[in-house]
Image (tube, rainbow, N blue to C red; front, top):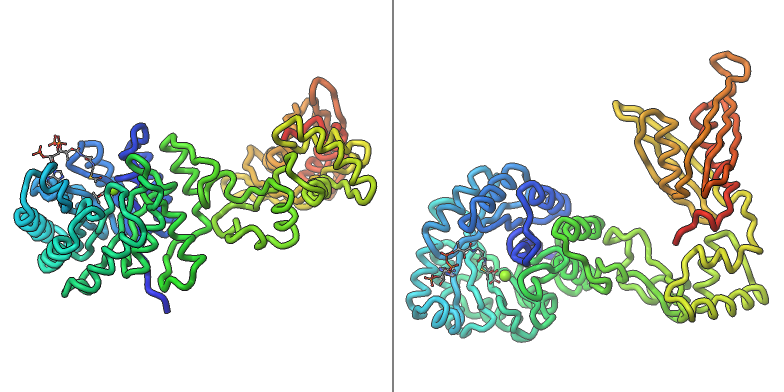
Length: 502
Ligand SMILES: CC(=O)SCCNC(=O)CCNC(=O)[C@H](O)C(C)(C)COP(=O)(O)OP(=O)(O)OC[C@H]1O[C@@H](n2cnc3c(N)ncnc32)[C@H](O)[C@@H]1OP(=O)(O)O
Ligand SMILES: CC(C)C(=O)C(=O)O
Ligand SMILES: [Mg+2]
């Protein structure tokens, strides 16, 4: 059985130190709840002494979240620790994170102190924090540039003082993986009471090494990793949670596991990006727009034959529906055929070769080729009459009326759900979500054929698209189904290229 690796998320503290990313309390609660659902073990909710707003956020998150430990940051200063403890009053499980700089730079130039005095202040801070909570984490700031002997000494002393977790930050993102792993190995081998505390990594990305350093830390004995969603954080950012979690999941030789629900990674990434107004770079590992996009012919052919040829992670594992095959002038026939099949146009041999030639001419003049472009190319080969097929309709009313639909477009099935003022409204809205035709429903008539309660309803609809009317008809004993079928009938009469936008 592998050992548990504790996931300490500091998106709301270190992540929020990014200029322009500050969140209000309500937004922080939304993120904290998402982190809880994601399966994070510890949420660093803020630095309560820093402002009344941050104090309030830590307090409200403590009330709103049940499972994760809520952690509050402080300096090795009594007032900071008292305020952190007060902010954690409502936490079901609270942790105070206190510490001090340990590198020669920090000791001499920032704190204007001496190594002996730093040990004394670190120990005093841990002892003081222990009066409020059992769970006290000590950070040795700038440990990545510290003297290993001094680091061992201060870590031994703060553990004696009661630290339950010892955090070894590479605050300036200076270390190389071997070097950072060496710090952790050194502590494991030389600090006599190290088994009484968990070692935490906290790496920054100034040289793009944060994930590599964190993984090296884990390989050398760290059992807590301090990370942020999307790797946000001061300067070049912190270690990104999604990268570490997936690196560990992909490499079973690392003898640890996490409790992260990886299928929620993508949605959490997008939530944080949206609330913090911080776009995710397209080539960002795991959560970037292109992380599962294949655009060159040889890769596309390989992925279509067997996904693992070019993918080490199944996109579904991180909550991305599926990989995408992007059509460009570097695409080959396999990719083109894949997209045409999806549109219900099955071309082979000479026909495929001709369309491919035309496709290349178009692709050389455009960056990306979308479905609309393909329809222009292959319109003549298509049977548009039943391009949209209604496969399944269900609806329920539990106070709110909800509908789920399964609709086939070309050869691909899509599902959507929606609520509405009544079942017909809910079903039609769900269909529109899938098809996205942006039509105006101008006329909608339901006629009973024989007037009994088991009557057949006859539905007639008129929809407008680009100023032109299209008519749909259907009849069914189920009035909702009849309406949905009439709507799809009308949509099928609109030329496909009129509403395919991508
Ligand atoms: C590596 C990190 O991410 S650490 C966390 C960084 N985050 C933040 O700084 C955000 C919150 N910070 C703040 O709101 C403010 O800086 C406060 C409230 C903490 C302090 O504000 P001020 O009292 O005005 O001090 P100021 O910010 O100017 O300077 C920091 C002081 O803390 C001292 N200090 C820094 N780290 C520590 C520490 N871990 N323990 C004790 N003292 C420390 C500095 O030496 C300096 O003291 P000095 O003025 O005696 O030289
Ligand atoms: C406060 C500490 C943990 C920190 O963020 C750092 O050293 O980078
Ligand atoms: Mg940091």
